[in-house]
Length: 401
Image 1 (tube, rainbow, N blue to C red):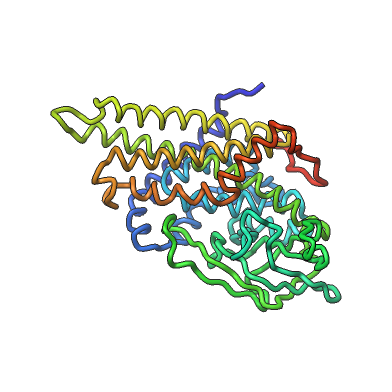
Image 2: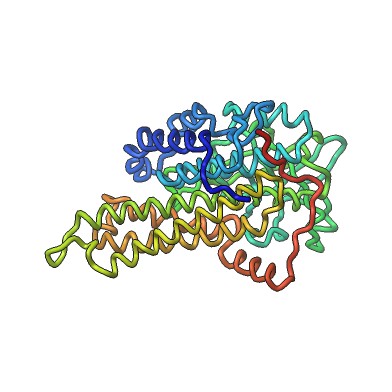
């Protein structure tokens, strides 16, 4: 039975992250966003001190050993302040660390997961390519085995922390015949270090949103990767990529929930300050309607991601539930951000207020980690019986107190 009340540990985490964000990030986020500047020392340093970078990694691997609901709570609180903070949780803690925890060998966990959970190394996830987003089978990266090493060649695009991360979870074709047939069982996963010869990265400068974060690309030019850096077995890359998305989408859903709350709070504050026709604009029914919609969406989104967290804690498959949470909350956050701008009127069109930043930031999540259209089709296929989740060789370990 789901208990919707938070434990003392969860409440303390929620309060700690909220206070840190309000104290350290909120006063500076306007300038960081305006300058398109990622402050690694401020952000990564602060998250490391709070233990967020290994939040749901067991203590034996250098993590904080908290449950998956705590991962969601941290994601919600971080995005309440700014989306770029939650993005770090998605790619480092969700997509990368939890994949290593689940699919990695003991040697891989000791070498990579431990320093990542401790915040000594920063990690990210490399699946998307210039010509391969929703169509993963369209990726062009290849990994040719020569002796005891794989030679990776290809380019990954729209990678969060591309110019910041030390380690990368990368996917490429190891079976070139299956690549021709677009058979995903020919894709494998690799742990890649920035220091590997043939690796290079760059930052995307023309981004529209999440301007305080780092987003870029990286290239692999006949880059040699040791055989022991193969994650899982050859041909399991697509399964690992989809597994990772279950964790990333969870953090995105929780983060979008935080953004809805940020829009609600900013709109409510402004609606009680701004007056038109002799009264606060909060007295106008259509303004109330928009704020009521934000509240409804916030409460529903929070329940959806909490349900996914509950299932994760108990070791139960949650692809369907997490996908629904991601789809609903990101679409709702886009609606909330649009209405937040509308409530602010002309001031919403100015960066003097946060409404414009919310609006720019919300759009990415409706696209990445499965577009709203992909998720809509997935949910219909579940209902129609066209889609069923099959067991995988490795499953996310349940939370152990």
